[in-house]
Image 1: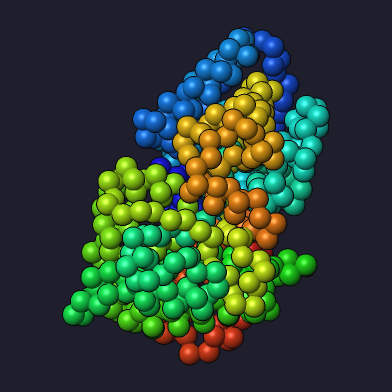
Image 2 (image 1 turned 60 degrees about the vertical axis):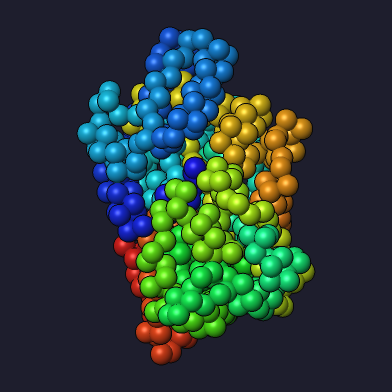
Length: 444
């Protein structure tokens, strides 16, 4: 299963992070004064739960312990941010020393509040130049105002997964490149059935799994904030253009209400009942994990992958996409920070470790060296997402002190737009900017 996408941004998740960060404010006094060569056991909490994922984590830990025989790692999986929150609030020896989280949106809060230790001193001591080790976009979502309180631990790229058999039946020979081509292809692939559908070209509504406003607007290369830190949704035409294009697609595929009735019958995103697996949708906005999951579900059709389409006036930038991932950090309350850093450094920067982990769970490596490693297992489908990850114009959502709350504000506004509840788009974007600025000011 995917890492970052499995924790799709929700109000509940962000609320948990907010409480976590607030609870940890001022707990950064433990410091890094432990002897990293002393015999020690550190607690590592992560969110993976599937047997194959847990095994991959343990295999990495086993290799680490072999290289660092004095450090033992007690790993605990299936740990949500809410559970981490509760443990760090309680403190004491039951709290984790090292944490891995799928919530990249929370980095701004983690850094701003002091919940996680700043890793810059550890990196400097170890001679690690982050700009030479990690892609720039990954550094962007793992730090805030110079505080590198987390590091990337694998990442995800978002593109288009499609039913090649359905494409052939509709006379479509290749994936759409531009948004107008995407709209045309989606209409060709749609087969109405009464007041519903036999097959839908794509589910375009923002409740459709990974079809979020953030994923789509990335294709317009947006600037969320101005140079002085103010929300820029009204100032950058990218947001209005994306929302207008998406609403137009919704209308051409049958309208919001009809689409939402159809979506109500979809199966769980992470099960064999996913609508793409069942042939109910011919194209799916998704991450690098979907082809493997579809094959595991026994789909009877051929699968294709491609980057998401770009605006018609940005055809030259085709290949870009939205990036996210898993983060790893050290609790600021830990009294074993030097030992904890050895684990973080190994899992996030050791090329062999990163590649082995990426191969095991079908994610994208998070270091420049690992992305070029001959040991990286590459399939035609995974190459699509690797290329998206390497594309110079691929982008992400920036870290802010309110965590990902500003994204929820944008997302809620996008929900209202697609429903037809926003009569004046420009005025609505301006109001959204004011709300985001107010919320961030309160968080700082």
